[in-house]
Length: 327
Image (cartoon, rainbow, N blue to C red; front, side, top):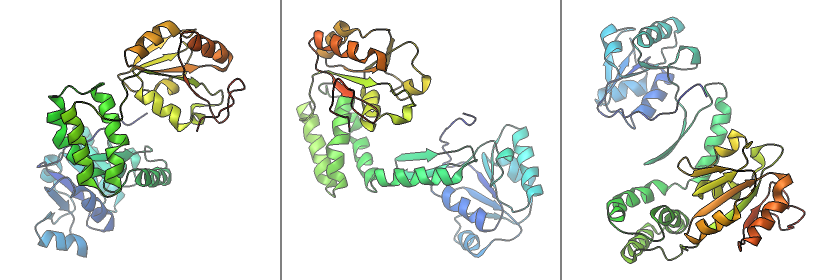
């Protein structure tokens, strides 16, 4: 990974767009969502930018290059259409460690602008380091379909309830309470009943527990695919992201462990510690165990011997010992 993903707070910070044509206008449309202090540096502006300048929404700097403007900006986007001008601006900004993006010129950038899915306050940024913008757009399309248009309004309502949640003892724990919110009330809001969804969450907060959340723990056995982590079923990925503890063999690929929550506990062992997992499940914890094919039968036997009834998930097909395939 060459570029570190980070979100910048540009409110009330000076932003510079170099260029006055369509590419510059595209950047202005994007940046106006978050930064009202935009200067557009170009001898002339196209009709769209000229109208924005007349409305006072952007400030026109009527020249090709203004050193004071370049040095003042905390973020600069170059779209002048002239490689020489853009390279000159980029070199000055990078020399002082500033943030600069040059349209279609990754080698001149200290930052790149990703494809965005905007469900404010939820924002998804998709980057390909400038090498595959078509792929980024395809992923964006997938995310747009998964994240319903009204999700932002629902999340904004949940944000207003956060202080009350923080002062309330929620059963079985806050993270599972939030999982219930995303599985239940979110679906209600997506169906058009935002007020009902908010009322449902308020009632659960008042009761101190979500009605559909069980306090019991869970063990999920996940068969490690031999041909790559992209073969894992979506449910397996979700179980890893929900798990309090991820049990895995010492030789587990890093790409598999990256699917787990960052704050999940990890335990590298050669054999399934069924007794310890049973104790954790009794305390309401969720455990995801990554199991190599050769150890599958032994892991299932150990879990059942400890009195556990694990969920079993496989890549693409059922394990011979357990013919029910995972969705």
